Image 1 (cartoon, protein in one colour):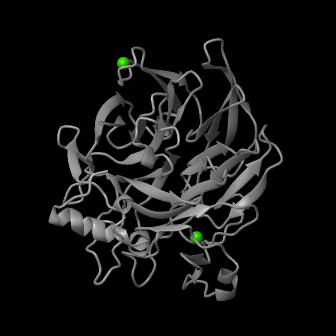
Image 2: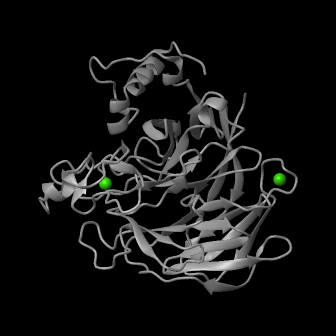
Image 3: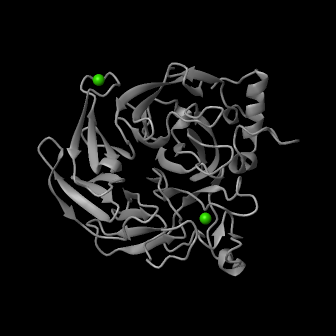
Length: 395
Ligand SMILES: [Ca+2]
Ligand SMILES: [Ca+2]
């Protein structure tokens, strides 16, 4: 990693030098006075470079190219055969992308499943394909070519739709199925226990129970490859008086069985929401492992352990997609950030890919999710522009 001498780069380096600064403010914010500057090279960020015909900006040493066009592209997953599955909930369908000549550009985009019910999260597990519809998980057998086939087998049902309608799914190292189900509202006490929670099911989708609660809308889910703990990104509440613009922070939460992550009673590190004033209740909740800029709308998250096309010092870290704000006076987000991980915990985050949002806040794309290809490059989906981007290192 190159250490920079450009004044702006030094400013950025200073801004990221303190994990406290990073964890609670935008990396692009000016460095506070007398911030402690850690000059360890790994704590400095490289120069920014233009890519994608000047439309995107990345750290020097990376480039972004177009992998495919998929309207309404949301969640992604790599199949055992190396093809990429993309959910398109607006079309109730799933698209399969295949790069036949392995040149880094998909050659075919085929709708392999239709007639689903707002499908979002997907998983390949033990030779089956699982789709998290808004109202339950369905499972498909795979044909001789490894492609989902036949009628969907309904494995379970949970409360559908209602505001936060996307459902995310991962299988843990314990072979259990985990499904994230967001809240029905901005701020309320839910009546259905599975709302604002991550549910745990047996491998076949049966015997559901609440695994973690108090999670307003945990869309990004990933299993830490080292600790095997499930990490989730979480959208916090809107309209918090008096500093709605900058509070509450968005959250990255590390899930443990039976824990309460605060919502709707609290936000951030056990801070009571003024609507409930329940400090005693908040004291018994889990604080976020990392706090991120308010209204960023963090969606997909991926660990980079298999991103072998990235420099080695990236592979212990994670990426998070910020979909971008909808109700902040100065729009924020619409970018991809790198989350630095130390000893199994997130310690800071910084800009990775920016440029989808212009100075005025206008956007030509909104990142949603990631997939790490077999060649070690990373795909980024964009549901606004309908593009799948591919990210590689150039050295
Ligand atoms: Ca190709
Ligand atoms: Ca929380």
